[in-house]
Length: 76
Image (cartoon, rainbow, N blue to C red; front, side, top):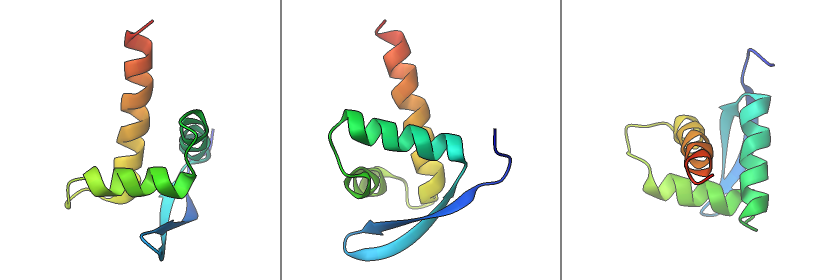
């Protein structure tokens, strides 16, 4: 497990931005995008559009991932 987040580049609404995520979160994020058949930038844009303005994008992505796997566990 990594202890420090790594800066990753994304394109949101035609503009480059970066988020700092741990390798495990980045891997889960990529997996979810793949499962949904979405480009990672598209999924990031969806999360960005739904997040509270006071919440950072990296935090919003982590919470999205957590909720995704919680919901998956509840449906089993």
